[in-house]
Image 1 (cartoon, each protein chain N blue to C red):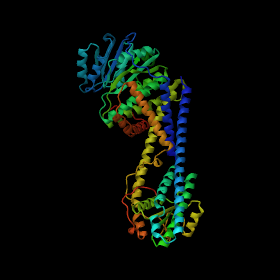
Image 2 (tube, each protein chain N blue to C red):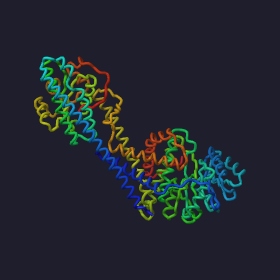
Image 3 (cartoon, chains in turn blue, red):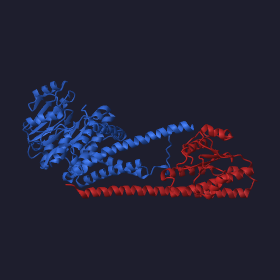
Image 4 (tube, helix red, strand yellow):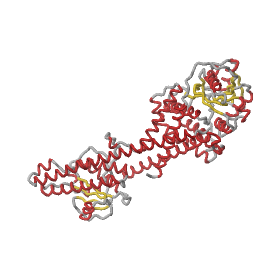
Length: 410
Length: 227
């Protein structure tokens, strides 16, 4: 076995190990089902809506917030316009004028985290949340968030389940499956108390978080990740409210998807450098022992597998072309024989099949938790495309980190 | 808190999955080798039967002999299986080496029988003895095999016998000595002529094989490796 193939086996072992770990977590602590119970108490809540040029989606975002099943006098919605230059200001101002719960603020552009800090500094609520202006909360999402905080008094922050808003194109369908896997993945990582990010769509914090560890900091355009790292550093618990659903719009073009994912991936790498001391440090529990090392490992294994596959495929093409040139034997389509003798029954094939099977089981479990409906077309899109596109952002993010360049938002 | 038991359990399950996959793959490879061996045994019996039939009939009934030609198709099919097994298990696998020895013996017997039939019945088969090496000292052997495979697919009556030059088999080494084949591989012995050395493309090889254009052609071509 050559070194390259041995590396693939190592990658598969680690990937399978992680999948097995997640499945053990699932059977150990199955997520409870959604109930119609109401919270014992309705705490005061501020939801910040940072917005920068979101004229196409902000109205639907605000409508989803005013439609939340929550006492109006307990809920405050703050739109913080981070210097939009499109029609966002007009739409948000008009909406605020007709909804007393909603207040609108305009500030100079300083980045999403400055808009969030702007809202946090002005809020007196017990719970402070955020909803990106391209996302929409389901009507009972806030009630579910409050119930999750009630059931977990030691939890200091939480994130909901994220679903893709009306996926239509193949790229959106691919992302909808990825998000569905994310539903399962996040809940299982939550089971071991090791969530590494508090994403923009509908994450919530107890007010005490900011007094203990401070506000959001500039952190490689992934401030929602940095604050999660910082919370782990201070021993503050983050949970996943898997019964609170939020819908988010996803990039519709490969270019936009790459920009978004390069930012996320590079943010993870750069925050990892900033918090390197947490790696393999049992003091930080499963976050230091599992999430961080496996996150980083997955990153490099993804890059390795992609480069190795590219090398193998291009070598094969070059060999075929040079053989054709040298021998004069016409090229023919590879023949597929149905006899069992010629079937690929190598260990590698079995391991790949088992890994894909576990992945499929995880997606199905995520689908059940999110009460989603994943179509065959979406599954095919995911399995056919994700492996081709993901290495691009992993490579770009690696390059960006090596050059110490910050990934852009758009 | 870090749950070490869960980490160990996940490791044990993953290792067990890898172990099971390895075991199943090895078992299936063993079944595959047994399949090849069974095919070789069947060919061996058929070949013995043909030889015996030849002895019984002598040169009195060439028509019957031509109706029961020596086992080119079966040998070709076996060669494909063996080539596949070799690509999967490696050329240094003991089972593969043992099977290759048996296969080479069958080829030699088939070749000798064909010579005898040819002499007694006056037929003029076209044959190529092809000598290759898998030891890394013959970079052109793969391509030479491709050319011969292509020609055999296009001319089903062309008899190609391929031999691993380095195989430790006395009958094969005797054949190599008799035909005076050097280790300058790839090497071809066409219709019992002097050895021809070096890679030849399709056109060169067609030019080297006299009477090839008189053989029936086939349009159904499949890709198999001639090794």
